[in-house]
Image (cartoon, rainbow, N blue to C red; front, side, top):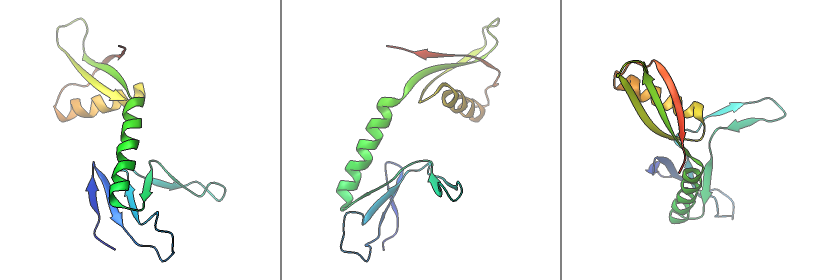
Length: 127
């Protein structure tokens, strides 16, 4: 077993299992991975994937493919904070799967930048 390392934010680990099948010796865990026990019927359920492959390069390709698929599923939103009657507004352009995720991401960014977070509006940008 080697120390975990990272590729595109994913934690990559090598662990040669004591079985002849070598297709899962390399694993990558998504940075947002979290698991919860959902009871005896469903067992442990993960929030994001854990990928596996026979080699590190194959694992990198799996990560690249997963990230590309996710990127294609993201939508672009403009999230506006401030008072529309005044000229003081902040607009954040956010890529997210849902409107709620876009608003939450923009609020985190605004908080970090110390921008007042009085939510005003969100618009989906379509090309």
